[in-house]
Image 1 (cartoon, helix red, strand yellow):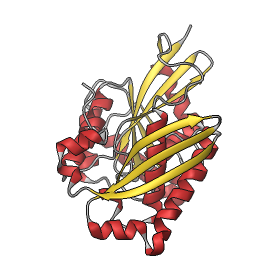
Image 2: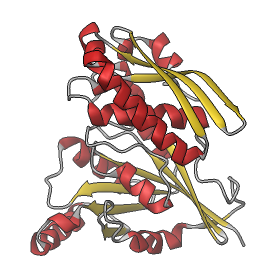
Image 3: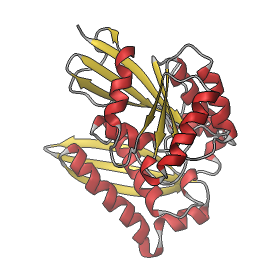
Length: 295
């Protein structure tokens, strides 16, 4: 008997959702950065264990949108939660809930969808304070389970699978058993480039970055990619390129090295920078970059 569950991972920005997804799968399918709002679209991660297939949906961090891109991200997060069999709501250990977290938990705890609270970064806090937080949250909201974890260290993941067990339903597997994501290779490559830019650039630049893959050709174990890294200001373009092109070279080198590890081929990456002012508030450009409703 094969079983399946669609599980949405949601929570505020930078709480560790993408780190958790990668840890659960044992594969890197979502980029990770200390910058908030790294994830912009729904990312599907697939794990098949025997007869059971877990379909995890990583979603953009819950926040109050200030741009059309932000509105798209919040719609993605909401749609994923509405369509799921189980919600994994992540919070930080011993951290006060912000208004968005509070409102979201009130909404989900009053719905019929099973709700598992995942308390992340428990390795960084006092156990006594953590116990008080668990009691307080249990009194405020309806949870089917509360699971303390450290996504970064991989601690507590067995507890998540144990608590998901009752919500697996008899069903065909919707993805091949050896598949771990439904993302096209071009999208994965673009996200690799964006991750390296997020890690290397100063705080004022990353949110205004998008990556477009203009050419993607694989021949005889050699992958040739031409990509354009878009930003919103000329001043940002100069920062991305860096003195004598050093910053852009670093981004490209780190992206190429990781892509070679993931895809198992030699990679030639030709990376350029272009300015598209206010692209996050321009519907046509958002659609070109893949930020459009699937329906």
